[in-house]
Length: 364
Image (tube, rainbow, N blue to C red; front, side):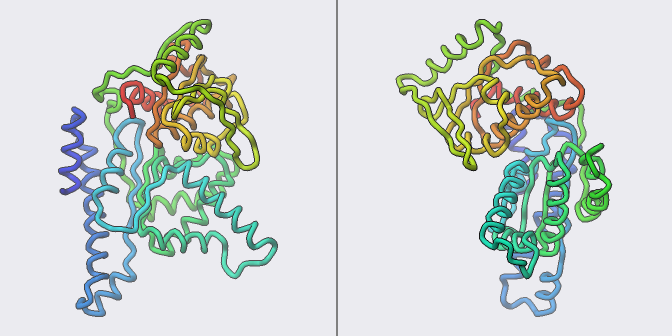
């Protein structure tokens, strides 16, 4: 099956209208798919003349960077490409997960080597290790929020390109708009320009958020008054858990304890304050998803810039639940479109609303 046919089938199955922008990106991804598969075939065919071996061994394939507004189909197209490309060594990461893995690897390296001066940069060693597992790496939601991650990624990408790893990424931002107004952004501007040069930039436009038009009827976003929110969600939780007993569980995350008070089977019931009002982050939410299939969050208030920490945690939580394909059932004080009344995270929250709209309709 070609990537184009896979795309057409997906649109037909989900009752989506094909767009010219999506078809253009499919065409670009198809060319890269053919190059990757052609390179693989030539490297394994023993009778290919040496001159071709040398050519393909030194050929650097240009990756692709797909950017655009939320819900335009970036992740969908990249996932279709990833599933269709016929090479064994490939990896697909959500960017939250990837950066968490990189930090963990670096910490492990420091613990193992101590104060010994390494012969090679730790990120170069890590890049070689990644290359052994994948000649193609797909990143979903390529984005960074602090200078530490930006500088780390700058160095790592240098080594990945040196290893001829092909990168395909999706983002809400053009490379030159990443980390806009960030602290010491001038330090990574050359890297952002390099991204624009080393990757083929594809803009995915369109006026509609396709997720909000997908079929589905399983409503998981419940509007409730504050005094009724906990009772309503507990009733829903009890119906869904059936006869499964309720118990508590303590997660140990990097030496810290996080007590989950209400679990039944693979269902977790928790309040918004417990999950977004504490000092938790992506590492905690990723660990949580390893112990559950559905998360029930009660009493989500209308969010604004006065509780920005909670807003950022909620955005990160929804991203992780979405990419881990977990169910989210929640009670909120206001309709979905009114959930955030602020400015500072308006662009990122558009993506959150889009994902909540899809999660509201589907048992993912």
